[in-house]
Length: 423
Image 1 (tube, rainbow, N blue to C red):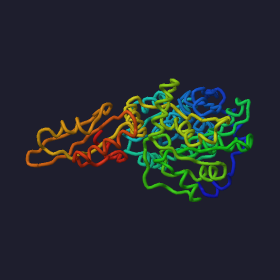
Image 2: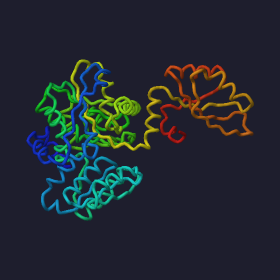
Image 3: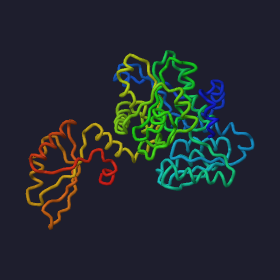
Image 4: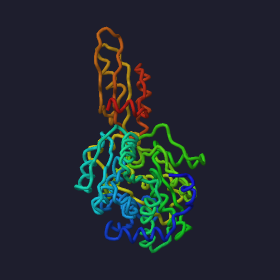
């Protein structure tokens, strides 16, 4: 997007958002704004969830995608549509293409889970062709742009487009239509910033006293860092676990809007996201994706400030692959301090394992991983050990007892890339 165009907007015009809402009528679900009693009791506040996980494509992305594609000039609408996405945006564009009868090409990384690919094909039907290419979103994006250039097709950006932002802004419009009370805080997830830009624009015009708080995962803080340093910039690398919000660089338009309109932006650890995702499922029966859980996790950061207040959390989506649940549970337990991993040096002589089990571990400590290959030409050998404890502080006693019994060790929690290879 041209920088001059980005600077043109300091807020999305309310009449354009209302026009987008009219445009989306009959296409999307008007998702409910529901008080969550469990979260309300936990934080001593009135917590309401805007349930975009219940949207027709299980995320808010259909709003911007349909608004963009359906309002294209006739000559552009006659051309093919192209987008790049690893998930929710792809489904939104596919469904919009199917409804509007426009041919679309959806570029997705080759390693995208099969469930997401099948959903794109389901929503797009015969109007959409899925192109699996590259190993990352950036590689898929480059391939998509190449096709656009060669065929003069129309590229639909996931967030850095005013029509996309106007469509996402209808989330905020619906919240204020349904909330028959003054909202003190509204938490909105941020990837590239399209949803946050739109929702904040609506609130600043219709509910200016509401504090708008953007939320990003700690491993992908692109908007957070750009706003803190007052300069839009790309991160060299990101943690892609919260895939729906893992964006290296915010958009030009969305950066300007978020910088102008957000009252705060907070980061939440991926481990906390996993803890809350599991709690929302176990306690409330609500299935969320990691990005859809970000605003719930932000409540931990704001716990003192929201007590006694009326709070809205935008729940952005629920496109989670069941095969990820073991990884989510693993990260949650590490974050809670209940699972710990060590590389322990064992003397290669009879009785070493017995000593470790009897002298280092106590009742309640459970070995959940043990990997060791004996090498006869060595006096000592490394052993990879995973231990589950009852209370987080128990690990400190395990470390102390290893030292007392002469077991040298390296603590591996926090070295996620290394653990991914072993666990």
